Image (cartoon, rainbow, N blue to C red; front, top):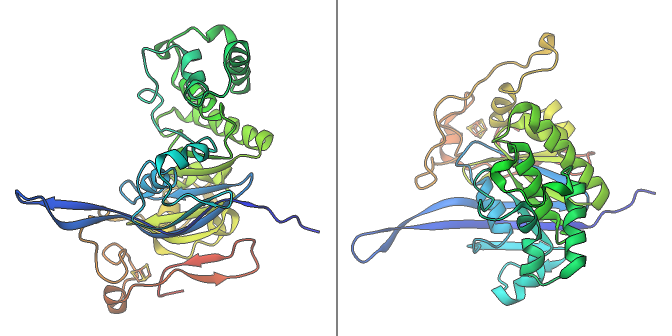
Amino acid sequence: MTSVKTPVLEVTDLKKHFPVRKGVLGRVADNVHAVDGVTFSINEGETLGLVGESGCGKSTVGRTVLRLLKPTAGSIRLVGNDITTLGNRALRAHRRRMQIIFQDPFSSLDPRMSAGEIVGELLDVHGVITGSERKQRVAELFEHVGLRSDQLRNYPHEFSGGQRQRLGIARALSLNPELIICDEPVSALDVSIQAQVINLLMDLQQEYSLSYLFIAHDLAVVEHISDQVAVMYLGRIVEVADKRELFASPQHPYTESLLAAVPAPDPARERKKRLLKGDVPSPISRPSGCHFHTRCPYATERCRVEDPPLKEVAEGHRIGHRVACHLR
Ligand code: SF4
């Protein structure tokens, strides 16, 4: 009998729009549709890779899920609890259950705090444990992420980039969260270090049944760690599927283009190159119809006027395969 896993995070039709104000009175003249109706869920112990070019809204999804930003519409459920509209006081208990690892380990750590203070900071803020218990927990966290306890008194500048990201991971783990938003956690690291950090995240996931929302601009980075992959374009998910299904049989032209940029392990089976032209259009004045039509090699008149819904194109896989394209 297959065990049914519990969703740790359920996001339904999430929107985050930022008003654009103009004039002396600061009237709202327009809106940036940073996130525009995004739906996904992540089960216990699993990873959703959220991928797209810079400016597609993926980091805004992460920050809105964490309620660092107030959602414009939609709902966010964390382990069955609706946290979409909770005020700060009610959110406090839920904040412990979800943490974030930032992209840049160089600027996300306070240079005036020692490594031990950084890793123990959230324990102090939430008043979870104090004294010798706290000391022991911080030392354990150091060990879990592959740092030495004799580095507790060192300052961030005394660590390498990879070690600093390990500090960020230890800090995120300190309150035993169920969900971690990994916001481009390896983009600022050397390729050789990226694999080490991803392997560490996977080991920790196995050990603590962690769920990850893993945000990246590069499909190659999410391939190893993800169970499912969602591709975002201009605030919307345009394709979502089980990882293997998405890499073996991409259905959306945008996913095809992102995959074309991933080096194939076997040059003989090199994917047909269909590299993207142009930049992502502005999320203030998005193209009509399918937002991708200005860059899509298959665009037709219908694409310019009709917005394709995200619909199921293949069943039989664990999570289905959904695509927003008139060709499917
Ligand atoms: Fe391209 Fe049209 Fe499909 Fe959009 S709907 S991805 S423009 S073919």
